[in-house]
Length: 105
Image 1: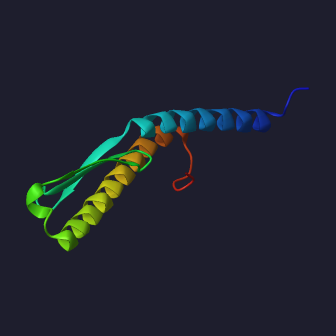
Image 2: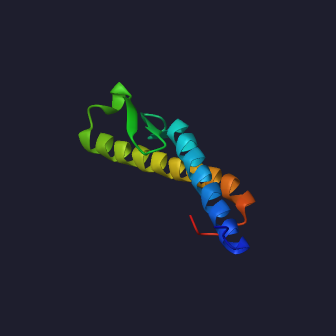
């Protein structure tokens, strides 16, 4: 049974969207960002799924626990923003050619 033209077009768009989603997931898995706080006294590394991979702490700040805690939180928050920015950039580049309405993904 042959589907009407608009149904075939919809199926093709769905396949294309699935391919874009798979490619995006692969690219997001490759993302690595680094962010720091306190002028580099605390540095964190995060992947595209926002998993914290590495924390580097300058020994000078290790004595002040409260300040250290604040800097770790600040560095992690900055890393999350960087991951979000990179994911949005990748999504915009991939979905731009599909003619989908903005905000759909």
